[in-house]
Image 1 (tube, rainbow, N blue to C red):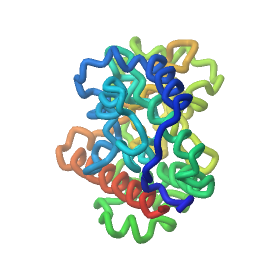
Image 2: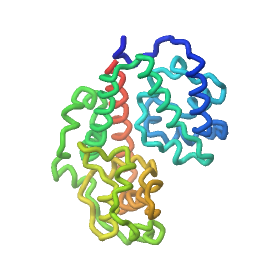
Image 3: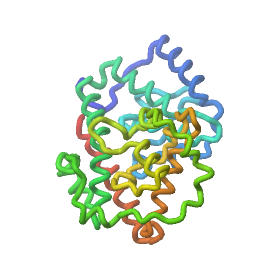
Image 4: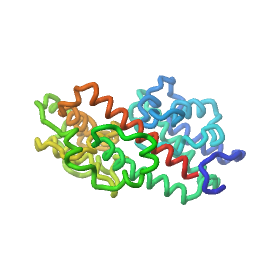
Length: 283
């Protein structure tokens, strides 16, 4: 079926093979030494049988990278590019994944309607994650899957629920390493962030300005950050946006509580599992 994300058998053409070879070279796949940082840093790696960037790079190096081998996992990608940003050898698994997605559409294995549905889910993800993180207890995976549309509706949860992750500023000892005072508010960070979309409330620039002005951010979506470093890599002033957000998170006294960290991690895992489940359901 054209609107299915399941993989069907197709033989690669010679031109397709040449294109794959070009993309492999641009992705620097041969520089990979299989350390696994790309997979361990991938947000979706929390999901069992989810996306595995290292396997995709390995298949590329073996000359066996094709849609038949990777299945529907390529559509789990959030396009955060964290796999490439954190790679010590600057391998770009995300580029291989993006190329596979384009091939799937070109070969009519996936319809444009399905692609649009996946894009909509990505836009909703940050709101769902923010709403879930603001709750005193992590919502159940089944509840998130069943009531995704409800969780994706702004605004975020009530002020009472947000108090569970209320920010209490502490002494800022990392200020000299973040370059936040150099921010020109040009929004390069926002443009590069995979979570900054028109329907979401997440914006790296907002958090950078809060930190620079000494104001406590009032948004629970602070904890939605993927830590992909795209905002920092895009900044012409070398402002370390991802570290600014990390510093703001550490200013929350509850951050030092094991139970608090467990709740954050559990919530993030369940939301991403629900996201992957919704992506698969589009087929």
